[in-house]
Image 1 (tube, helix red, strand yellow):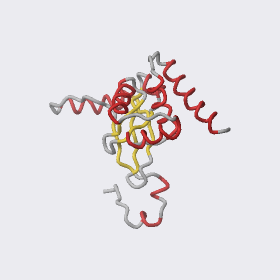
Image 2 (cartoon, rainbow, N blue to C red):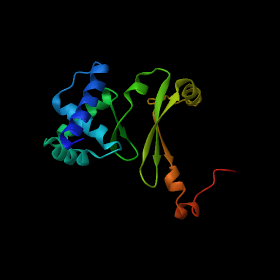
Image 3 (cartoon, rainbow, N blue to C red):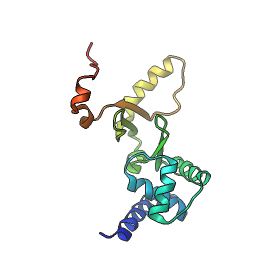
Image 4 (cartoon, rainbow, N blue to C red):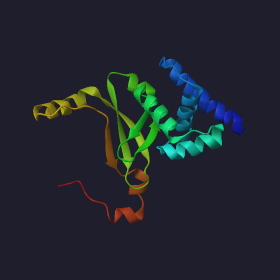
Length: 166
C-alpha cells in the first residue's frame, strides 16, 4: 500500500465512524480524527499538529486543534486521558452500547494504553457505594494505573515490582 492510499484509508475509517454515528464532520475534524486513528496510541495536541502537517499537509493552530478535539470528545470519538493530557481515538462501537463503559489501562512504564469495556452493572455497584458515601459520580470512565505484560516481563521491573497480595 503506498503512502497516499494509507492516508486515504485512515480518512475512510474516520468518515465511516462519523457517518455511522450520524455526526456532522468538517474536513479538518475528519483529518484530526483520522490522525488519531492512525497514531493508534495517545498523543499530545502538539504532536497531533505535527502529524497533521506531515500526513495531511494541514497546518492548524493549537486553539483550532483543541476546539476540534473538544468536539470529537463530546461526540465520543476521542478521549483525553486526564493522567497524561494526551488524546486517543476510542472505540465508538463500545461507547454506543449501553451495557458497557470504556475503561483505560495505562502502563506506567511504556505509556501503552488499552481500552477495556466494562459492564455497566459492575460499575453500578461501585456507583452505589459512591452515592452512599455522600458523593455523586460525574464520569464512569476510569484510567487504571497498570504495568503491561511486556514491561512486567522485563528483568529490571521484576526485581522492583510491588506485590498486591497481603
